[in-house]
Image 1 (cartoon, rainbow, N blue to C red):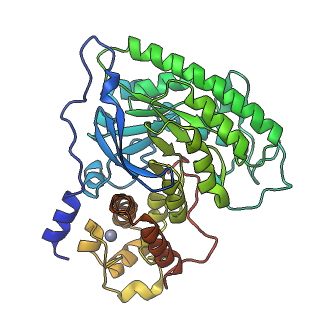
Image 2: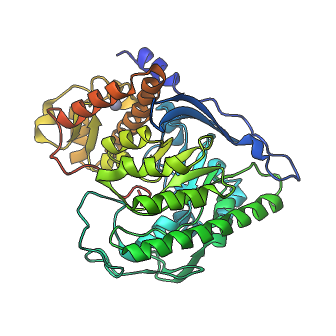
Image 3: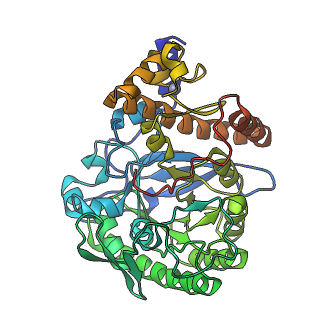
Length: 450
Ligand SMILES: [Zn+2]
């Protein structure tokens, strides 16, 4: 593919963003009408659909992939490059930005987007995942059998419990300096308002699949009480922080792998005045699609749904089909930095000795900047010499892979061929000659730090 063709193909996907945020007026609260969701085409018989999320910083065509810029940056890749590869929005971590540089710095800068020179829509997660995973140290999507292992005291091997939950919030030891700190619904809302992302998440309790049923029930109710406090505090901050664009608040549905608890949690969260919803908590891989379906059975159709932190290609298809609109995931960037490359025929490592003399692009069918300008042999050399450009070029490719995958999924839903597209894509990816060994899906805890 020539540069001109590749450039045109990618430019066609770059979204247009308003020069100034919509719905922000001096001395007035942000106009809530600047946020909304329009449904496009539905997958017949399923909750999945295409649509558009409207935010003060521009639109997001859904289903969409949301790259994770943990520390208000993509590691090794500029925001301009993310836009060029078709990224529509970015997600940063409230907890990390609270730790450093502190939310006041982002507020002073004019918000997350302006701070990091990203003109489009942004998300922050609540910080709950980071704070609470200090508790047990487990990753989010588990592909293991957890029957018979349930205990509220169990923690991951080699981890020390650093977070303790009570009715009001969570006390934890900062992983940065060991200082004792506190998170609650009100604290999370205050931090996220100052960070200023277009879409924020309510502070929820993350449990693990190791917790007992009794604990999961208590936790769902506690998350509901925290959700009500988040809505109240969000309303207060919106009315008092004048001159800012409206920030949308998504409620998070927990309930682990229990069908009845997921239904109950979704009904409760849907009863509150949220702008959208997050599908959160630990999810067992084999029932990921079912879990999304149980929740979306209860959620209003006219509000967007974000699936927090999934990573594997098959998980994305299952979540899209069952009603997820947006998906954040650190895996493409994190794995790129380890040399793992996503292609249509599977995931493989650029470090392999056989690639030293391979002058083909990473993926001959890919239109990204890396594939249209560089070879496998060159990236192989950069990885072995530990050059920073190895991470940059590999990250651009992997992020483009996921952004384009979701774009192709949108086309498939709109074109009425989603089931065929899903089956072909999964068969080629997991059955390709380059595939990695089974059971090593990239399901690292996604809202985890990059
Ligand atoms: Zn590429």
